[in-house]
Each structure stands twice: as structure tokens, then as C-alpha cells.
Length: 300
Image (tube, rainbow, N blue to C red; front, side):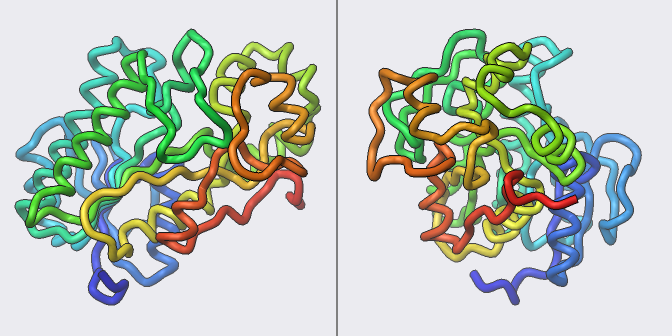
């Protein structure tokens, strides 16, 4: 589909960090936007706002119909499993996605982009080490989710794939991404701190960082990828990885792999710098996207 055919984009979960970034990106490119969120409005970018319980199919249908959306960015689900029982987290990931996709098909909405997660790989919140067949990971790498959050993200991808196979279904994208950094967080956490591997290994978050392959993505780059997904002209469903072009550690990637993943096969050319362990070639080839923001080039 061409960008000119899209006029209004509904963003579920527009109150959140990524939601606000996506709303700004869409507004900057001339779209009318509507924020669909459960709580009170916490942004001033969207052209419209509808309080919507995304676990209620009727409310999802009603809100999407009322805002006359041409496309949807679905972010309105649990951002992490912290503080919620497993079944609540799983339901939030899966059922909100099902409601959004089902309503989008029946309302004739053209395109839907859904927030999956790096956790769909089997990384992130799982207490066990991530299982890797090769590096860098890409969309063909086997998925091995075990915890409720990761399982929910993988199931929403399967749901999106099924809806994308329908003859009259919308174009559907699912985006896998690691921790999201804005300028402030990037400056405080990366630029102004010790990013040596020894220091990271001593930190309480080391397991999670290793499981997510020392990856991150800047909010601006991720928001641009969501926009490109709703503008995309492919048919059916596609999953895309998103990542910054480098890692979060001040160590060349070849040495990082030797230290942290010594038994994992490296595919393709050898690493010769600080390259990410996430391969985003598919997003570049299908959507023209590549990450532009790196903490190593950050200027306050």
C-alpha cells in the first residue's frame, strides 16, 4: 500500500514510552492519530483519545470504528511480567492482539503493526540462559519461549501470521525489539557509565543483558520502523527484528562472542567492530529501515 492511502492511524497504548514516540513519528509525517489506552491520557500529541479496555472485544471494535482508522499500531499490552501473575501477562499479550487483529479485518483496516519482543526468541525474562543456534540472530532463528511473557509474545506472532493468511486480512507486521532507549536514558546508562564487560558482569541485571544479546534500540529508530511497517506494501504477515547497529558493551563484538557465547556458531562474515548480535537485514531489504542512533556517537 502507498503512504498516501493512509490518513488515520490508531495507536493502542499511546500513553507509554514507545507509544508516545510512535505518535510523534506519525504526526511528523502528516498522519492523524488517535490514542487508544485504558487509563487517563498522558500525552499531548495525538489528535484524538479514546479510553479503551483492549481486553474487551466490544470496546476495541467500537473505538477503532469511531476513530475511522486506516491502520493500527498495537502497543497496548503488558510491557513486562513484573508485578503480574503469569496468566495476566499472557492474556494481555495474546488477547489484546487477537481483538485488535480481528476488529481490523472486519472493519477493513489496511495495516496493523504489533509489538512483539526479543523475548519471543526465549530471551529476556527467562531465568535460564538463552538458547542460541547461531549469531547474529535473525528472523529464521528458532524461537524457544518458556516464561509467560515470552510465550505470550510468540503466540501473538502466530496469531498475526494466521490473520495475515486470510484472504481479506490486513497487512500485519510483528516487531521484535530489545530494551528501548531515549536520549536521557542513553546518556545516563551508556555514555556516562562504565560499559566494560567486567562491570556489566557484576551488575544485578547481567543475566537479562546477556540473554538479550547486549542489544538495545533507540526510540526514534523504533518509532520509524513502526511507521514503515504500517506503510508497507507486502501481503500477509512478516516479523522484523529491530536493534541498534552496535552492542551495549565497550568491547569488540568478536571478543564479546568469545567471552559470552563461545560455543555458538557465527554465521556470515566475521565481526570486525562493535556490531550488533541481531541481524536486521530483513527490515532493510523489505522496508528500507536501518538503525541510525548509537550510544557511541551520542552527543549531549
